[in-house]
Length: 261
Image (cartoon, rainbow, N blue to C red; front, side, top):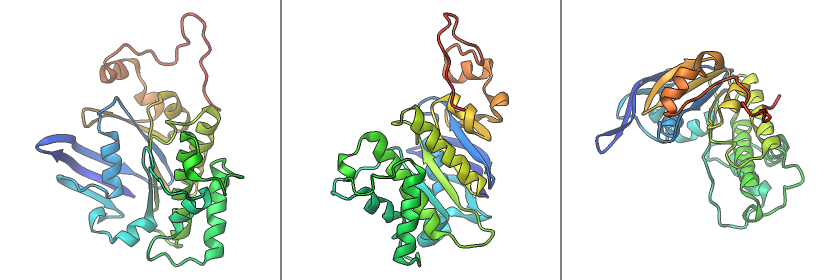
């Protein structure tokens, strides 16, 4: 279990995150939503251990995340940032295999390659193994980054009761409709395997379709947390986003309203 207890994060006395209490249980997909600047990515980075809270504690199975050794943390959680910059002419397979090359991982090369190939297939990139990362589209690069994270979790896996987590920062931002479904379907599958999955999304319809719970953030605080029906309410969304919002209503002019299924 990942947990934030009364967490505040500030830079130069400006609080980006304020008094956050949030539990990320195993076997669930939680989605962070909210306007730009609400603190979603900062909170994800705090859960990842990339940032240390100014106040409060971030824990994984009761241990402070910032005190967990880097090699163990790499085994227990994988992070997909909004974008991954790579200028070297590595192939997709080589990039994904980086997930299995973390110091301290004890994994034989054949198993590492099999894990990488499974991850590549899971994100819909089978057949791209020998394509150069620098020649991929933005969406293909994003899926390669997600595959690397999946390979990392698979390579670092040890049987036991410890929490393992997949943390995704805007994983669908560069993806078309079909690949959004592929990636979020895989996120749900990872949760079904007992992992903790946290994703930052801007698309409220995707959040409603895939999340077990939605966390709505505003100005660095949690405005609401619960099921889609509990959080995606007209009054609440209108207040947080600063514009009139109507949920579960088809456009007045009859335009199609499309959701994955």
